[in-house]
Image (cartoon, rainbow, N blue to C red):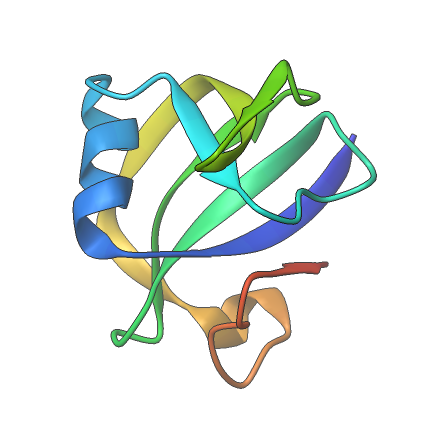
Length: 95
């Protein structure tokens, strides 16, 4: 399974990790899906949790819908340096 670091805002990460959101919308989705996505919160330089992104199920004005499964929050956020990055990517980065 591919692994990616996904840049995401805190409120969207919280919704995915709490289970209130079941899809992630992206205008440009990763090509190699399904993938384990590490959720890097923009502005914090840390990864709050992880999930599995499935292939796109549909497209709307908000972008492609990527189904999210097996979301889990880390007890302590991990620095992006643990994933070989110096900063949070603009959208996503394969690792």
